[in-house]
Length: 261
Ligand SMILES: NC(=O)c1ccc[n+]([C@@H]2O[C@H](COP(=O)([O-])OP(=O)(O)OC[C@H]3O[C@@H](n4cnc5c(N)ncnc54)[C@H](O)[C@@H]3O)[C@@H](O)[C@H]2O)c1
Image (cartoon, rainbow, N blue to C red; front, side, top):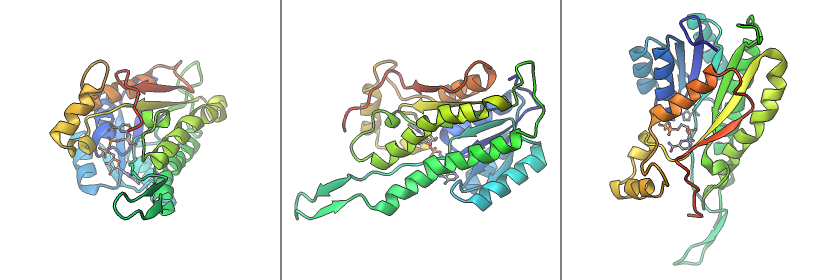
């Protein structure tokens, strides 16, 4: 897909980190961008700085996602690009014993379900509603291309660490649904791909102490540093531009393979 001002995009999680970098890069290519995020203050600021529109959306809410698409499309027209970056994680062992008291506990099921609802169901909700909108568009080119969707999983989809049962399940679900969704949409000219980031230097990571960040950087085979959000954005944008990129999930991780803990 050729990126220019006739194309509009929705970026979930676009107020921060990987989503923000992608929203900025799309805007640099002239694309009209709408940001879906729960963080109103940061989302409004990013949208303003790129001439885009902000929609306060929690991806777990059907009504908020519907209202977000309505607002985005009223302002920018029907999107041909959806980038799914909204997501979060938590950590708890499946079952464990307190070292001091010996008390036994297990992963709280509501916390497990919350991560699945945000990262997996929230991603699918945005895909389904965006794809339905894209079906109303005329194809752009001889291939019959109507649109493109990029999702964000994680290397934890494949090598999840101790405590990551919920996060890994949610991201594994995103990887698993990539090909069947691409197949569902192949007759309509909509491509679907997923990125599995390694460890990226986003506000999420900035909160970690310097020694923790240094140890994480040292654990990356090459280059020995955290990924830059711009490097994620570059791959996401290439997945939009390259018309033969479809049904694929790709690690972007400096060759890291996460250890058990
Ligand atoms: N940073 C990393 O190292 C890394 C690694 C692998 C995967 N990821 C994934 O990349 C994505 C982006 O992460 P990031 O590092 O940029 O984090 P971030 O916290 O900087 O940005 C995530 C954004 O998503 C928004 N968000 C969270 N839950 C939401 C919801 N329910 N509805 C709408 N918006 C919501 C947040 O407000 C935030 O603006 C996430 O899915 C994360 O799991 C990040």
